[in-house]
Image 1 (tube, one colour):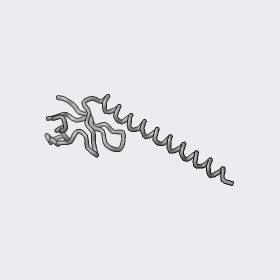
Image 2: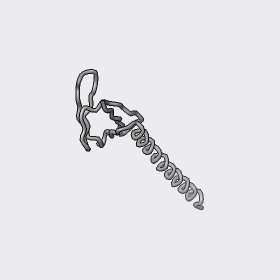
Image 3: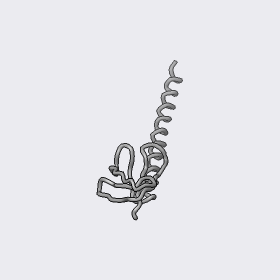
Image 4: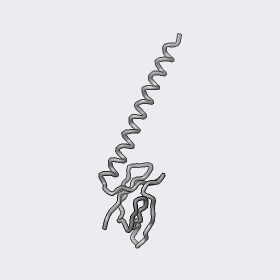
Length: 89
């Protein structure tokens, strides 16, 4: 049976589920020990589903690399502001 890999909006977890059914935009997965099936949008505010573990890892890595770049820019802006304040006479 095909597997799908789910990432969350926050955190580093990648959950693995068996796919019961899927379309281009929706996936139905098995959850829990029982035969419970739940439907999810493949891309939502809470989750993203991927066909491979590699894709899921690349997605999360990209998010954190973007965070690093954002914070580097924020640090540079703060350093510039400090210099301006210190240059006031």
